[in-house]
Image 1: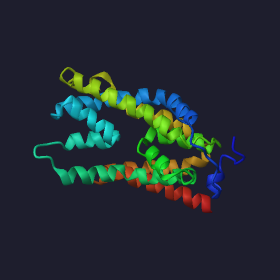
Image 2: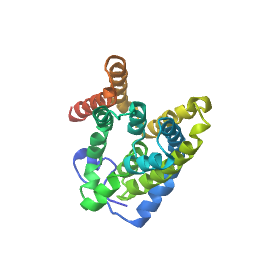
Image 3: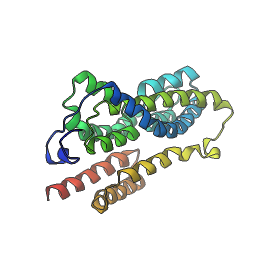
Image 4: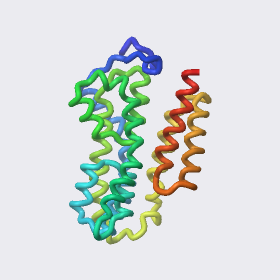
Length: 242
């Protein structure tokens, strides 16, 4: 175990990390329960992809190479003939801007890894395993490969569930009928409970929530995701520096 405390990164110190196979295994094992929840959303995407005209292979390829549930669903919602390329690129870019913030949060640990290990791991970053990894690393863990392992678990189940949904797409006309549309929300609620660090988190969380709700109400597109995240980060920075 590292000699650094759980909050070394918050004080500007970089806790030592290592990149090992055991770290990958640990991440995969502990990420599997979350991956099973994500799989429910993967089924939804597979159904929507088939309804939009994609083949099973095309839907699976998108999930394997993009690995971004919200962006993929939004893309399918915009799917048409001819494909509105600019609208798809612009919308998914806005939705995925949050990964810039998530990557910045990982920097105190990942700056110690080689580019191949760091960027190879970041490819498998999803909201769920990022949250798990942040909790793991902030606890003082040295498992730099934890993100990769947990990301691989999500990737495997995401692709497989996409195939299942795509194959069943002609049978399941409305995923909401089976409650599948709520799966991702339930997963995020469970993750949020695990990340809650006491009343000190209330200010940033409440601000992010309020800004996101207002953004969703008054702004077009998916800007509320990025704005909520930025607002919460700003409040935390002000609180920490103060």
